[in-house]
Image (cartoon, rainbow, N blue to C red; front, side, top):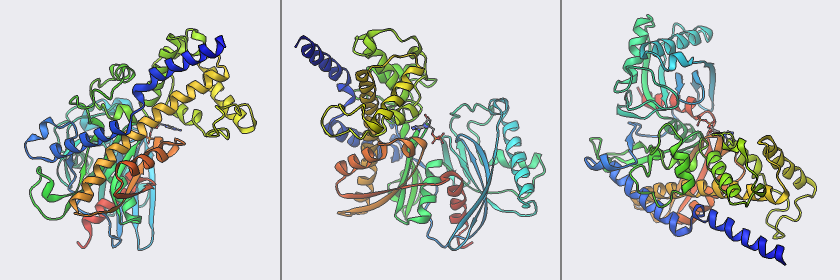
Length: 471
Ligand code: ADP
């Protein structure tokens, strides 16, 4: 019984340490209400300087209606790779051909002219390969950096992110920069008709298959969302008629301090070690770049308290980014013994034995000797962190769908969310937790999720196609 007492005491300590990460229904309702308030602030005319959610107008006024046709060029800059695509939109199908081009770090971080010259060279190479040199095709540009958009084809770069720092670009219209480079390279016949964010591309590409798709969501390296808002509510653009897609830039939610009581000591440690401390606070609770880091800090705290690995020091675990978010996906793979209430006593059986060995292999690579109980605790930590991420994402989306429902004066709203991002697509539970909590928080909305395929490329072409519709 001394053992039983010790185990019970340990259990209490673990629960105490993880409690701040377990958000109650009331916590999530508060996050939802705060997001709603920040949305209203961001949409307003003057007050949006104080809003952490920027609510940037995109000048995209409608989703595809199926009548779009034609051949379009698309560029995708700001994801993992730079790509050039040709997208052929026919009655019943969309055909895409694309090439990936490398952007060397020297170009990402050199003079802006060199970056845009390089992009034009890639376009010319692509057109040559695709036998499209003689064609002047409308071009859609997925440019996934924060921009103040002044028109569908006019986007002023607000700041670089993701390792880019080319000089002379911030404060400039990226379409202009591209066109100037085209002139320098004697590439006549470049016709940029639209600049879009990757969330918008995702919404548009899913919107082609499902006309109810009026929300775009990304949960990958970072997180962001966009949705169709009523023009009359958009204080930052003239005009009252119809709707416009708003790029929320919701990753920055909380940068004004409104989420401070949600952040735990672990979140503060993670934030402090980033290149943009104090910024993108909501994103740092949710996206792939950070979840592994949060887990790593919790594991270190558990070791410190002698609750894990028998308190043996773990030098390797001190290294930043040594525990990537893909580990959460592997560690959280469902076990056959899950949920049958016997506390994992089946752990050594059949496929569960295999799953357990995978967890132990990950920990072994980190030079950690994990007992069965250690592996179970690491798994519980991962589950706690990924569930919180999914629930916070649900609270954000609940604010969005409820606003859309009220905008339209409906008792019930049916809407589809187009989603992209490796975390959403690969994690074994993220999407279920997100959908389940969203249903709880927005009971009057029926929300369907549709995974986008190549949202950035196809979406940019579709924005161009919608812009050219009927012209
Ligand atoms: P981006 O958002 O830059 O377009 P992705 O959507 O591919 O890129 O997301 C990359 C992120 O996904 C990385 O932060 C990485 O940690 C995370 N990731 C990669 N593989 C997995 C996985 N199997 N499970 C969960 N997250 C993953």
